[in-house]
Image (cartoon, rainbow, N blue to C red; front, side, top):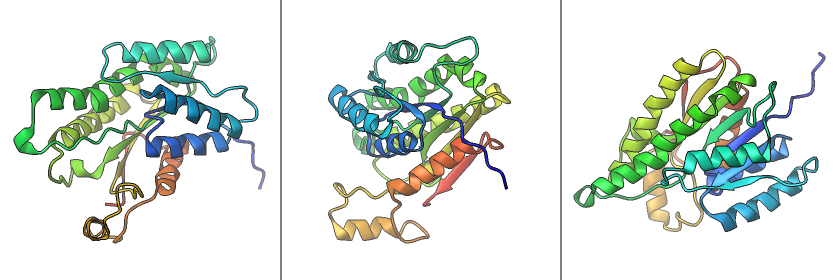
Length: 249
């Protein structure tokens, strides 16, 4: 069987400095893709860029764009930064694919819920990501590209004290499925809805860890490596759009 070399992709990772964003960025760089990073913490971005540059010997520098998705100009800032780092041409855009790994996971007990909680969380997890895909849609279409978003299994199996977060994840779930229709057949849009992913820093309490792990039929937390495997699979799945892959539920 004759195999052909995989074409190198230009992939924008949003929320790149979060635990899963870092793992996804590292995996994409390791397989030879041209990664572009964006997140709100400039120092973390700088360190991650330097680390990924070592994994990308064909690149002098892995570009990073610092932007806070709660700011109204965040999408414009990201698009301008991406275009400056990788100028588009008539044949190819600045990015081929986008991974939405927006990470804030705010705890908002119902008794303390405020309008500001809903507005902020909806902006970060739904409004800004949808507008960013809209702004880069022409670039994605040139490459027959893909959008893969990290969702949450809690949108169909809610848990306590996260009303704002789950509302936002539910909104982007619907919005991205609508975009799958709007952008077909040129751009694929898919979602990975995650169960609980292990976090060594947050999972120090063995009793809490056991209680939460039993929520999954597999009886354990997932790992960042397993998330990366599903994300890259969907990036490469050229006959899938509008799909919601539930893992670890």
